[in-house]
Image 1 (cartoon, one colour):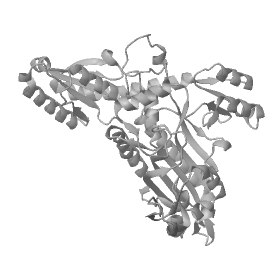
Image 2: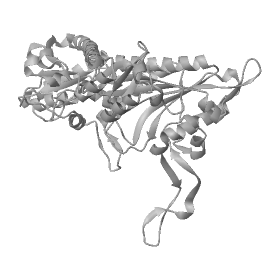
Image 3: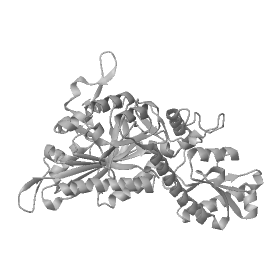
Image 4: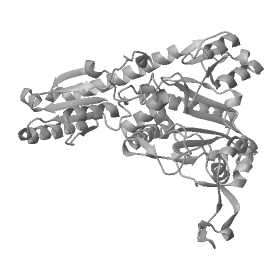
Length: 491
């Protein structure tokens, strides 16, 4: 939040409050200003509006292709999971029991008082759980599909919704219902499974950096933060502008936990029956919340070019109605030229004032604003501005050269956004050497997280007291420093 620290008192910004004044409320106001999403009539659930859903479509497009490149096949499994499936794996149900939504009846009826409710004669013989995650029901299918070592590896992914009853909902970050993809793979050996869990984490890390311009700390979760039923959970932990951590994705080595409960066995080459080794991995719409908190500023959102619903806002600046046909024709031609260059663009055809068109694009975080008016037509030029640079990023180009210049600007913008986010994250992680320093760090309200020797906190009652007092959690043991642990407040 380095930019926020520079906020000038009484400076006019498009978003109020600013990040420095009230980061949680700023986050909500950015969502409202960008028209990404809104709360629904169903408590804990929300509506993703077209501009926000376009971001998720880009996640599906780009991450989806990366997943397919790993020889994973897409499928779809039931929303409702029999309670008996989940109950087979005790650790799993313990981890999700308080978050599960339960379906107990299959019909409605009107009672003697004229009130509509569950029909007392329609109670299900077995309660159904609305999936909080799908290891158990996909494991049942794997049990049927895997017979021989020739059937392995089996790599499956589904794009779907899940439900985890959330008492403190917050749009994108924590909601009862959310969208995600969940991968579920099965292998013949333990080494293959662990290599797969780590490989899929690397796919996520690459996607986060190459498309969302989000850097993160890559590592393994401590046992207390491990996914229920897993033997290892790998993660990418990103740090937001307010210094809190956000778990951007997870990839789990499930060992034979779910293979045992679902009886996923195969006949191996040596003629013996063996249990499979499985993994699961997922990324959800909460990454859109991370995108906002990572890249937004006090004027709204700044969209990384490869994630933006559209990369260029073409703004017709019309002062004289007589100029309208020529200007709009030039805008259409520019949009077509940008499309030919592989750039997505949208023309603001509203009757809003030029300044309002500009601010609408700024608040939505459109990477590049391109202006066309009578003067530009007369000179055969256009002006365009990078959202992340503001007025300092304004350039002028000949109309014919504009698509190539815009394309180069978009590539540079992504590079600069990722580098800036990485520099901020590195500055937010502080190395400390004692539990006393840990307490002092968070007691002072210092922004960011700490890196401390894991041996100092492992099994420590003093650490548990500090964590409880300041609402801290271990985020991960970094791959590049496995004897140390990252501790922070988190979303």
